[in-house]
Image (cartoon, rainbow, N blue to C red; front, side):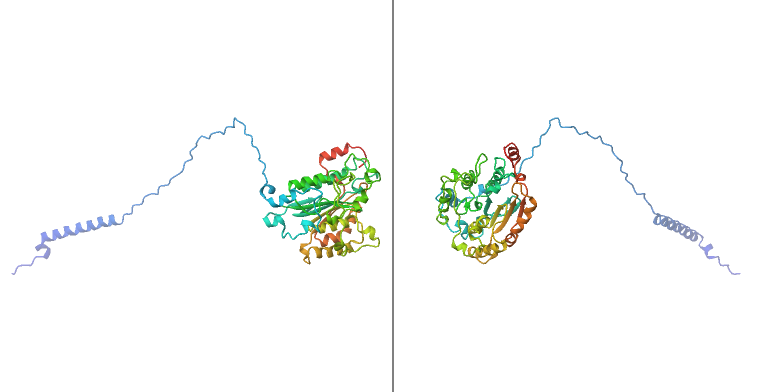
Length: 401
């Protein structure tokens, strides 16, 4: 009998056991590796919470020493302190009345292109003429100084009634005082047959010329005067001497001038170069008077602004007079209307006058005001333009306002 073959594993019993052992270890190792590879470790996020920390608060203590706060006033620069016009100031400051020579329009009629202030670069000052506000550096004031500005509502004159013109003069002086040195100015008082300027020509608004202006008008209608605008010794030979004065030669009267007039007087009478353009009414000897003559004086000065204060209108229709003024301006200023002055009119109520009629009087000036780019204003009560001190003084005076 042949030998029986043993199974494979029987022949290799030891080897099989080793292989089985290796296989088992290999499985264990794989399981261990898979445990490590797929284990996810998650960590919780840390959250920071802010806790409120209470800190002690310090109480504010009041200042033991009181503090006084002072508001400083802003100082506006005065142009007169910054301008040096030495040549001009020597010329005007040394003028001694009556040595001012008359010229046709004087300095104001010269070709001062743009004005002194415009050349230097300063803005024109604004002037408040009894409610009419205009900017000007070459200005002429013409103000009524007749009985209508000094009489009371009872038809009589008294210290109290003369406070009307006193106020007009005081405010006029205030306007002149406020002008900067580079401005040119002139003024004139008028009534029916009389137009008497301050100077024959425009003057620089220097301190010396302002003081001269105040001296010139200081004598007009003093409050204590008893007799005004009437006959008597104060008028003896005055009109004969006055009418003999030649305006264009610069003749002036400084002695024996009645106290109702300025300290010195000129007799402004327009020459043929003006009168040839002026249309007179039927009563030629009575038409060219009052404000009409004063306007011609102002135009000859060649200003950029004319201010007028009056109580009424006298003369031919204002539209006719307007054409006369246009013709005069064409000769003095040339054809360019932009160079013509602004004409502004303020109507003041006479004492006892119905204020409702003032608008009618102002309407008569409307053609002139509108053409010359001016403004109109009404003063119903001059006491509205008095200072508290002037008002109090007036109340204590004798007479009727």
